[in-house]
Image (cartoon, rainbow over all chains, first blue to last red; front, side, top):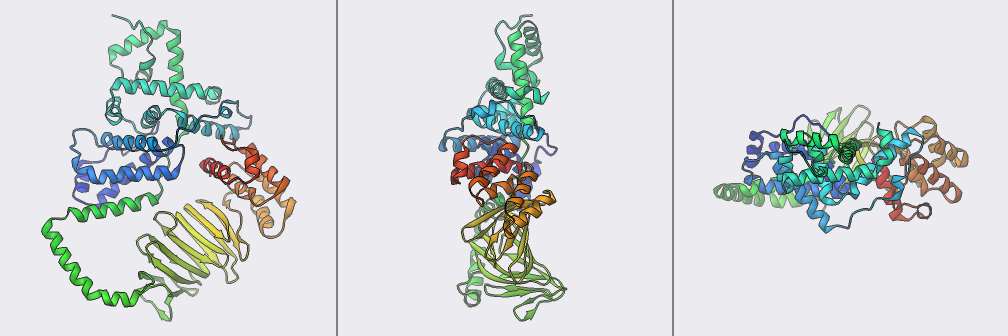
Length: 185
Length: 355
């Protein structure tokens, strides 16, 4: 899991954004941009143009709706709800998922660099091939250290559903990447 | 205490993440103590979580910010109080009426004027030396001698430093086209904008910004070098294109356009062979060295080579790439050797993770 130090933006920054302070908005953007972009990038099969589009949609939506943020939930939860909406909406409009190639389950070469590259590529492909609702849950958990309660709010579902999607999503990944079990141990 | 009588597949991630209530977690432990299937599934979930360590955080390109910033500024202006808006509108009208005609005369059809600042020495704009700050418009030349340099603010999208012994002309200053022509010397560009808004023409082709920072130099004969430090640059000449990412460079030659890009940390043998192959008719010997020396990251070089060699040589390049890194789904040897654009693009997108 990715661990980041500056996790939650301060109430002062959010208030300054509401009042139209550009520097404050840039600070907010800087805190979240890489995580929003990374989630979008891996959600959309490594397509940087789509990741940029979705990231922009998220922050543009933030501009118009930050006045509605009441502070009764964490800002991250609220922001990631926008990310989830943007990703799932864009996925509905775009092509069907990329399917996982049989090549990815073949055993790797003896060459260490090759094996590492193959592992990384296979993980990206396996994540890409997850159903969208599992994929977004897995990516949210990986890139943002939200509790299940926060994830439930971001994903518009119950905590039980979060647990179920994460369990199934990670098991699907494990099944598709079982050829690498030895490589990771 | 009651024990889970059914399997706990749906709870496993929550159990591993410590998200089950203590009582439920204890029940889950008791169940797994007796259930081999759930223990095996727990290990699967753990493995599924562990493999995600191979998904690193990726930095958002700086070009993502520009449209967001523009929308934020627009939103801010709309939020101004009504009285404030009327005052601003009145003041703006007065100012525009006063300066409009003069502005039109100065800029005519060529676009905006950009600020140019002296960094050191006495750079010149046209025939005039600038001591502090000045302005440049389309058609103006900026020239520095051995002891002078200048910085140009390129509209709202970035800046260009004009290094010593450089002669560069401002070609266009429009919102959709910011363009210089570099006759000789070196410029360093820092651009934060959506792709394809900033261009630099040279005798050997055009550098097209894809959201980046880079240095571009050329001598008067048109022999040049592009070195990218952030983002991507596309260098184009008569249908030939080289894509150069951060950490990579690309030589340019008059009438030949861009060479094949390579990473600055590539083996010296590879770089020298590449020079001989691209510009000195180095032939098979140079190609042998390039293929033998290439690392995974040097698939940047090999990917560009694919379309610049023919016949058996193209097959050798393909085979080396396939040996260095797995060929992704949707890319076949047959289509790659035919230079199918969709195939090459798909492969490039996958390879770019290693560049």
